[in-house]
Image (cartoon, rainbow over all chains, first blue to last red; front, side):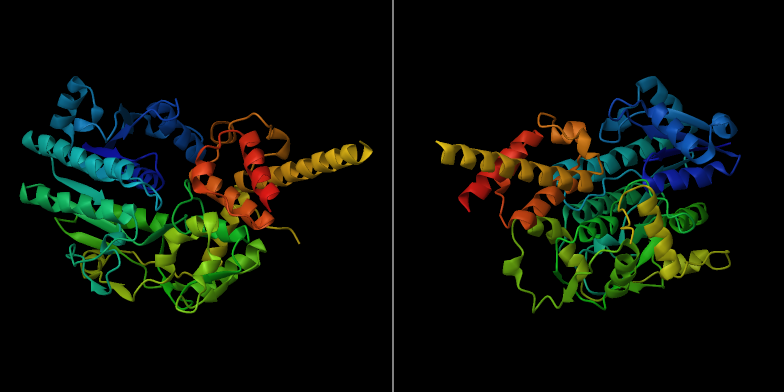
Length: 360
Length: 94
């Protein structure tokens, strides 16, 4: 039996990783979850299984919910349970994170940096008991901040500035990862670009990333936006990202992997398809040097500000040589980001009411 | 007296219009039924509005009435009634 501890299994990407790990009947998952909004950890996990499979029966023997909290030392796990886990755990998948572009620094640092440190400390204890192999840490290409040119998988500090506290704290977490590698931990770091909903169903459990500006645009509060209309966006559907992580993790060894899709879409094209589908008025894309920022005031400014850097990012290439070398020979290919895929994502938004399509 | 009564009536109907419009904005953005929006309910706790939705609601109100809402004042909004009062106070100034 391969015993795996996973954090963030109730989150969007974490749940998709957990589902794939469970397909291997030799894997036993220990899912670290906390009570949230009075819903106990095991209830939260159970709800996910019911939503996707109808029940938990097929996986009952493969899953054990561990009540804990990554922001607490040694993950807030009771001492006796923790001692038991140190001896058992072979692999850790650290998927838990707060992905909020508008979050104040301290709360997001508590989850993304302190949380990662606690996971790394836990891994060190597991390693001390001799059964531990490796840790897979989910990061983001956002650690590159505002840097330009080619950003390599082995790069971290290139003198970049950060567009928000999310990027900054994910960078700080990776600094810790580097430090713990020197302590002898084997850690694979995965840096996906913009994670979208499932490519087949559009399903997404939390509407973060590009979903938020899309929601804002659907309200028709902006007739113009300062953006680069030919800027290319790199979407990676969550099912492909989870597949890539589960394929690479067993082979990965102390390296970083950029999960970037060679197929991209421009902001202009993305908005064209979205506006036609949802029937909202498309904002005019104005070159940021010609945009009249005095028209952007109050809460409209507060809404748009976090996304302006992403509409005007400097030209950057996320080099993925490590990824391509480890995936070579595997049946894996990123999907084409075309109208069909975008419509799958948008239809799901409409289906669950995140953005309602106006009926003509 | 009659003039005053008419003006009061107009004012009440004007306020009711504003409240109706605000309810429409909240319902659209927070994806709740207009009938679920009551004066005394707490916006975050009872309508499940997150910080993005709250900012969107305030931005939509600014656009609708051509006003700029002060962030510090908005911070003190708890109930739907607080929001009505804040918008009314801005509109009076226009």
